[in-house]
Figure 1 (tube, helix red, strand yellow):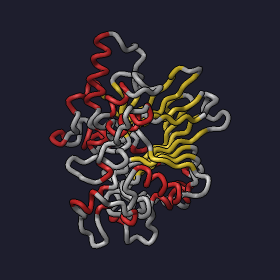
Figure 2: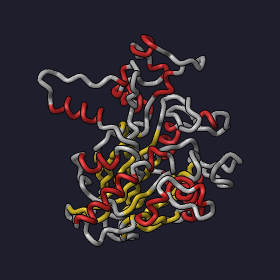
Figure 3: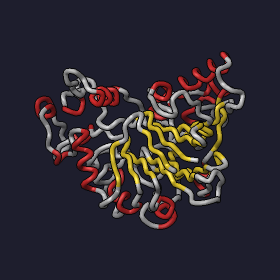
Figure 4: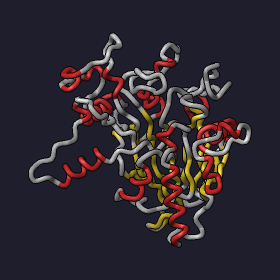
Length: 370
């Protein structure tokens, strides 16, 4: 068996903001006549969707299992149209990292598509239904589905409760207990400080086809991160202490085969998200604060993709003032962070340990783990 990770949305790198004059927000220019490569770059540039990925297992070229991780806007459309092995494949479950709209808003589109498919007879009876949604209790009750403790403060999709089945992963995150998704695949939810009870996901896959048989492969999807819980009172995961450079968490992520990790900006200019070179502003004063580059040095993953990168806050200068107008349009000063895709790629490769493969994830990208 082999595992395939397909990105349906990545944030994406250098989010394109209406009205912004900077070089990041300008579409790639097409040569005359346009080349296949240039057209592919333009498609990737325009095919924006919120951060999400599929993890599919293949056996003899056929998909035998499909997990969708997050489902924001644009994700279902990309899942249906991007030319990847997951195209047209129906997820057997959805794993949610947290309840922000850019990670759950596409659930409505997905469920409409599935209900139409069932009605038309296009979907096999073996497809799990209601659709299993793996999420922490707070993510489900306060952001997604019904809230039995407070019905007046239910989640956004409570009206779809008949076609959604919540699988609560809170205890697994607290107890550090893996969950079996398939006879060859488990997932460990990892508590994260970001919003409510956010989690990351560490998948362990056995190419042999059986858990515990042969050499496993590990795949970590770690987007939307301010810091890992440190037992401080501000943590949404009260009392949990996870040091990504020592102890259990460091051991879990050391040497992973594939890591997708967020870096919203190059510098640390956002309170809710980690920067590549430094910590979230919320934890900048912590004596043990870290940026993404520190985690890459500590974990030494074999293959890395950066997701959720917009670089918008890098427009803040050293005095905390926004740059405007011509200063933005002409800015190519890397002192405030990379300003183009290629600048970002060069900066990433220069920052990581020698031999570590790193790049910016793109919608439709396929990574194979065997």
